[in-house]
Length: 254
Ligand code: COA
Image (cartoon, rainbow, N blue to C red; front, side, top):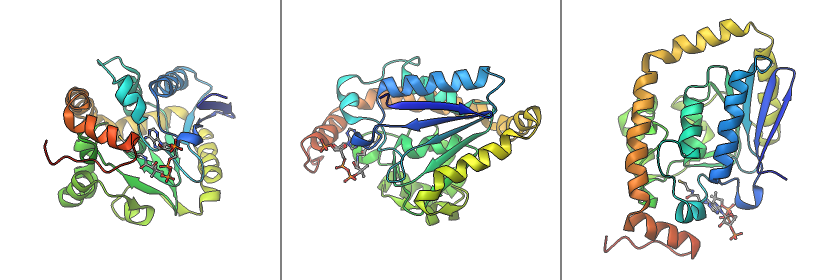
């Protein structure tokens, strides 16, 4: 079965991360499939709302680390950047249903979703520094805006997980629910939105986002260039090697 499942019914496209054996970590093929799904949803007038969901035990472990080692993204047209630009500029309502770990891009993609419903087991983290990397998905711009600088610095420099209740306090997320109810609740909300006038939804979202869209896309480009460079540097190679060998990384000589 595919690692990304899409299903469209009654104006709602559901995109399901379906790679549970690797904790829904994302490969370049998965980014490509999600970018294509978003493009299709944007172009197809019969699709009015998109829901991105994982499993009730895990949303996503972030980028597949083996993929980072073997096929690091190169260039602005690589699948990951196509997905990130697609999610940032997606014109219709976008809902995320998040349970369990949401690591790296599993968290940063949420800053581009309009509604985020989280399970009480949701654990958000952005451990880029711990991996010898830097933030992506415009998180270096959006996280300080959302959380204030000091909480953002804690989230991005320390990279430790924070739970759904703490996320809600800083404005990341809508109601926190039991994990078994999250995907169903997100779908219910999506159906409510799909019944509303689509032009009003699109205009309202556009008006809320337009003030900083170009800054977001510019920040993504700048982060992407630095991230792409850092992926090939010794600190990231050590972090990825340590993950694959199930040991602690040693940055003491770097
Ligand atoms: N890339 C590749 N494989 C991954 C992965 C990733 N990002 N995350 C998990 N996996 C693999 C594990 O290596 C493990 O494989 P194995 O069964 O061959 O040993 C399997 O998925 C299950 O993961 P495990 O770590 O045993 O699950 P867990 O429930 O104990 O922990 C996480 C879940 C998400 C907290 C943990 O897997 C994790 O921290 N993953 C790495 C996250 C990360 O650094 N992502 C990059 C962000 S840019």
